[in-house]
Amino acid sequence: MAARSSGAARGNARAKAAAIPQLAYNQVRPAPIVLISGPEDVLAERASTTLREVLRAEDPDLEVSEISGDAYQRGELLTLASPSLFGEARLIRIDGAEKATDDLILDMVDFVGQPTEATTVVVRHRGGVRGKKMLDAIRSGDGEAIEIVCAELKRESDKQDFVQTEIRAAGRSIAPRALRALVAAFSDDLAELDAACRQLLADAAGDITEAVVAKYYGGRVETNAFEVADAAIAGRHGDALVALRHALDSGADPVPMVAAFAMKIRTMAKVSGVRGGGSGVASSLGLAPWQVDRARRDLSGWTDEGLQQAIVQLARTDAAVKGAERDPVFALERLVGVIASRGRNLA
Image (tube, rainbow, N blue to C red; front, side, top):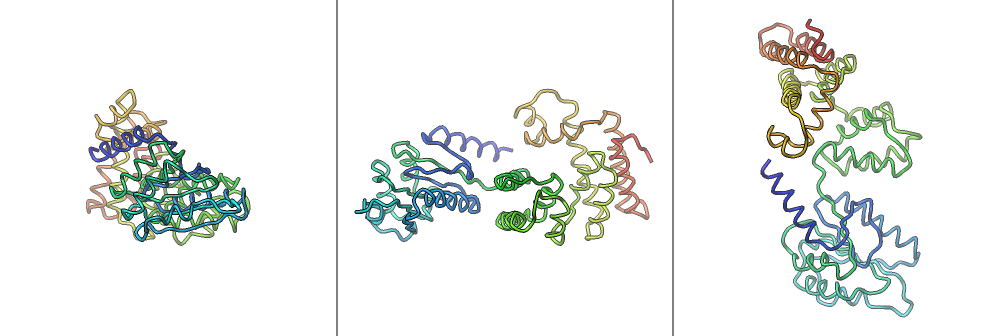
């Protein structure tokens, strides 16, 4: 929690220091200087490509130049940006500014104060302290710059938002369960998730359903313990049993399956007796704010007595899958039944 809080504080300090608009990757627009910051290359590449397409639509004769930050030599930027006889539009893309040479830093600081008409300079900086003077100059607001923030997408909800954004931008929609399945299939690689979205949009007609995702990526979709728990907690008994069988057939171990249920139910129990919101409540419970919000959604339809019964059944099932009973699968199915009934089915 401390690391998360300090990271948020640093982010807030930077936001206050910046005098330029800070936008998401899908909000990119032309500006004399476009700083694309952060480690997520997939988002950065999407923003850079979109900007190039926008500029080329405005001027089909757009001249594009590429500069490598770690190989830059003094005067290169000013030469490329200097006005030409015919005044054609220019896009200068500087990659690897986090490895910038001293020459690039000096030239960019000079360029910020005197951008060239009809020239757009894109500066890609993945993070780190190298080039801080250059970044400070860009963020000062003197060069009419904008910043596209491409933070790493770590949480599943962030990746789901990314997929939703891409699908909606194409004028399509994706079913909630299809969205969860697609993200689960490519949760470790945003580039692959991005490619999967593009393939579905190109090859599948209409809205994206769970059946469509299963058709294209069924081999990649592996049911995990939390998917089983989510279905049961939501009261979808049949779906939870199907997901449980799928997980077990895929080699899932019953012990961590029970642990996943326990983690979610205990979080719900923590949150159930607390009123109010905000980061203070989350901190007092030792949870992140999003965990509190999710637990409150999961608590819909549950009673305190139901939670108590679910916790008791969790303890019994934990013992069963660790050797107290001969059939751990039956014990898991019984647990799913109790939780899907929100603690009312005491089989």
